[in-house]
Image (cartoon, rainbow, N blue to C red):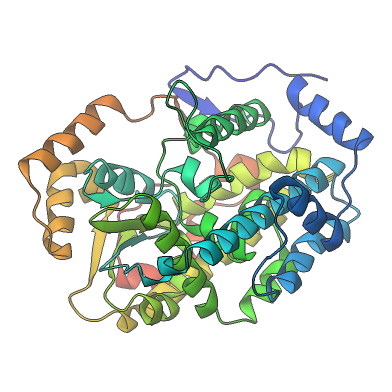
Amino acid sequence: MNASPPNVGAAKLRIEDLRDPVLTDAQRAALAHAERHPADLTVDAVLARARTITGLDDFGSDDFVERLRVWLDEIRLDPNRTALAGRIMFDLCVKYAANRLRITGLLARHPKIHDQEIVAPLFITGLPRTGTTHLVNLLAADTRFRSLPLWEADQPVPDRGEGPGVDGVDPRYVRCDRAWQRMRAGNPYLAAWHPMNPDSIHEDIELWANDFAGYNIEWIFQMAPRWREHYLAHDQTSHYRYLKTVLKVLQWYRPGERWLLKCPQHLENLGPLMEVFPDATVVMTHRDPVGAVQSAATMRAYGSRTAYRRFDVAEILEYWTDLMERLLRAGVDDRHLVPEGRILDVYFDRFMADTMGTVEQVYRHAGMELTERARAEIIAYVDAHPRDKHGSMTYDLRADFGITPERLRDRFAFYLRQHPVPVEVR
């Protein structure tokens, strides 16, 4: 059976077929195409393709190969995965391997890039759906900040000889926009849930991916238990050093006064973050964690219709509840690793009630002046980006997952004692 895409202009969007999916024409076509053109999920195939695309062959340190193999095995060794999941994994790994080649090649040609200094970066962290995206986009409207738009995160280093077209648009921007349109075709709810247009400020986890690190593939592929086991068994400090190197590359291309970055995964890596960025300021967002879990689990369950041949929504809910609990426990236990005076708590309800007041608080905490120009830039962004422009998602834990919000909230009692946020999901 086919289904038409939802009315994305509607004020409220609800996924009615979460447990019993009805595929859209675009989803069925993508699955069929992947079955006809299965990917070769081997390290050699990925690296060969990346070399062909870039004309380069130096990946730098080869420690990433082990992690790349785990990523590929996550799909290759699971008979329940679809050919489309394999195709997406292969293409992503090729993209990140090619980026790694470009970054290594640029550093070899311009070694003074290593002398760039990353001064007092501002890191925003918190669970998904707690206001991190809105806050980082607001602050990034201040042109003094050096932020990370998706089109740059997607390919930090252009191909040699590649520059803006006759229209002045960077080809990387064009490619990123095409990818965004493909993603929207595969998931018609995505624009309402988490827009990924080229100009949107993206998570620095995308830069980690060029080192085959971070929780990116868990997000993209719904669950990744093999990778999670590997990730949790290893210290992440080296990947923060790699992140810093890529930030130097991006800063060399386009300087800014101060880096502005965000990613939920910083919650469980405050130690490595502060070791590599000792003068960083951390902004931590807070909201009812049940809302974060139900949002993540719902959208991961929706994505499972093309990633798995069969899936269990209860398993997906448990996976993402566990992941969110782990992030919050680390954020509570390790916040002392951030020096006193350099961590700021932002509560979602207060943020929504007084947006500019929250922005002013962040500037004060970061030791920056909120100039009249910066204020005008932020207000202009707010006016141009109304909330729920593409509609808003509605969720139902009871109907979709067979669990009450109260029972799920019990998992987060340790967090709510520290941060008694208002209950939003009832």
